[in-house]
Length: 339
Image (cartoon, rainbow, N blue to C red; front, side, top):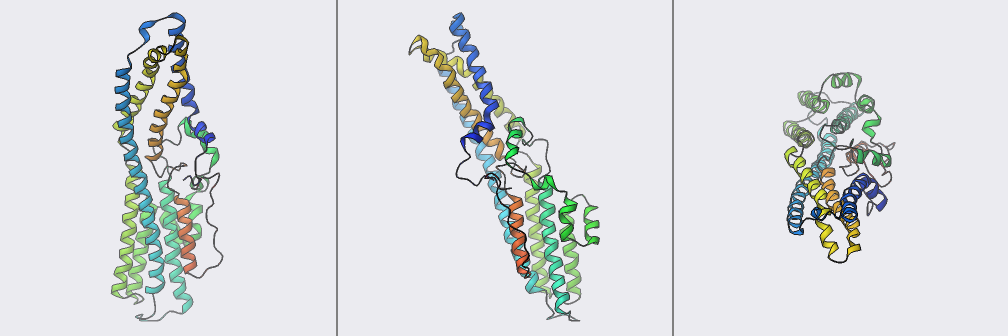
């Protein structure tokens, strides 16, 4: 996620430079042919071009509105994960006590129970973000125009394996069990539920508080499912593909419609077709790319939800609830991009 006031012209140019080269070529070829060889038939009336441009603007607006909703929904889901996580930490600390226990536990053992449940939740956050960062075929971070942009940031989930990342939060038995499963995050919550049942049987949680803790686990399942839905269901390919075709049809035809309009202002002003055609093409294509960059909010791109930073914030909050002072530092933005 970009956190600076603006992206900066340099980054915008880097992101769109390959398109600009193509726009210059598309605009220059018909203009040179028209001026050099006087092929008057190359000129197209402006009215149909204006109609096509209006239609393309509408479909780009529709796409950007839909993809922004996907991005905003993903942010809302992770906001709910933050709230549910804090609630989980609070309830674990205050609901699991010796008050109704058949056999009271020493404070050290009770604190160990709290730590195990809270640390296992941090492992769930870790497993979930690793799963959400896995690439999908339809995502765009490996496209040529994004490859050069990657030098501005790093993706922690691509730098360290899940196994290494969750080692600090799980026991050896839990770790072996979780890594043997395909959907690791799901099974971490399942293990949490089993532990709650065991604590309930021992009387460390009464019936009402057991239900409330299970409700939080149910909420976490719901949040995870919503994230997986956005991750696994792309913006409909028929819209994305046809939008791209329509934009490029307009870009290719644009200089042919501009040539006669500039010629009306004077013979030599026809050459203005090139810069103005490039400018209009750049605006339309960049608007289209803005939609592309928003449709996959978990693809580990610079415009995505900063789930690594949010997870670290939750971890700090939960470990402070345990009374720890040796805490990890918040994730810092790199070159204005927070992951």
